[in-house]
Length: 428
Image (cartoon, rainbow, N blue to C red; front, top):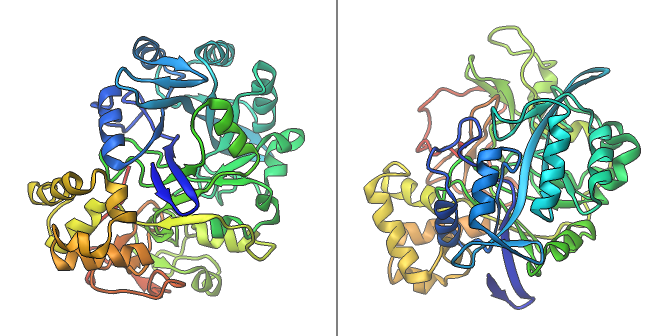
C-alpha cells in the first residue's frame, strides 16, 4: 500500500500460476508467494489455478475467508483465481485465454463440477476446453453472477481474444450476447492502457494489468499489477472492476513483450508495423508470412483517439535495473546483494521504484543505479522490441523520449548480442 496525495493505493496481481501449470516453478507454494509478494510491495494476490484439485486442496487447507478475501496465517490477502484456455472453431480455429475470479470455495467447486462435464482438468493448472467464449460466459453467470471473467493478455497473437493468429476482431464477435458481461480486459506485457483505449469498444471497459507470472521471483510477480482503492472485500474489488473505478495500473514498457513487433524469430528479423506494410507482411529473409505483433494488431483495429487513461506507473522490475548497471545476471549474488540492501532500507521494491526520493536512494545505492531508477520512473529507458516469441531487451545507456520508448528498428535484422543491450529479458 502506498499513500499518495489522492489517497491510499493498493496493488494487486490477480493473474498468476501455481507449480501445477506448465512451465512454472516447482517452488510455487503459498508461503513463497506470500513472502515475495510482500517483498515486491503487493497487497493482494490471486491464488491462480483453482481448477487443479491438488492446488485447490492446499488453498482450502491454508487460507481462511472473510468477506470473500482469503487470508494466510500471517494475514496476507488472496482472492480465488484461475486461468483457462478455450480452443474451439468459430469460422476458424480460436484459442482464447480467460482469467476467472471467484467469491468462494463453494462457487469454485461448482465451476470445477461444470468443467468435469466438459473434459479433464487434472493434467495442468490452465486446462483446455472446447467451449465458445459466449457459451462459457453464459454458463459461468448461471453458476454465479459474482464470477468475474477477464480476457487475458488480449492482444497476443495465439491466445489473445483480439490476437492476430486465433482471435477475433472485437469482443462483440467473441462473446456475442454475453459481451456486456465482460467488464474488463487485461493488457498483457506487449500492450498498455493507452494502446487498448484506441478502440471504442474497449473505452467502455476497465483496463487491468497482471503479471501472468510463472514464478515468485520479484522480476516476475507483480511486474504488472492493478491499483485498487479498497481491497477489504471481494465484492468491493469486483465493483471497482465492473464500474471502472480502479486507480490505475503498473505496466512494463510494451516493447518488452515477446509479441510487440512483427517478425520471424528463426530469421532473427524484426520490424515495425510501418515496415511490415511496405513488405506486405512477408519476411524478406525467408519469403514467408511474418508473425504480426501487438502494435500492428492494435493499429489494424484502432477506430478512435485514446481517451480515459487512468494512472500508469511505467516501470521495469528493480532486478532488471541493477543487472544492467553492474553487468551481472538477474539472479546473481552480486545483483541480490544490491537488491537486498535497497529492500532493507525502503521496505519493498515498489517503494524503491515509485516513492523513494533521489537523495534517499543516493544514500544506499550507486549513482548510476540511482540515475537509472529515476529514468525508469520517467519512461526514459531504451528498449529493443520483442517479436515472434522473443522478449524485448533493454538498451542500457540509451535514453529516449517518453513518447517513443524504443528506437526505430524498422526492417533491421536483429542479431543476438548486437548493439548495447545487456540481454535482460522479461520471460515467464
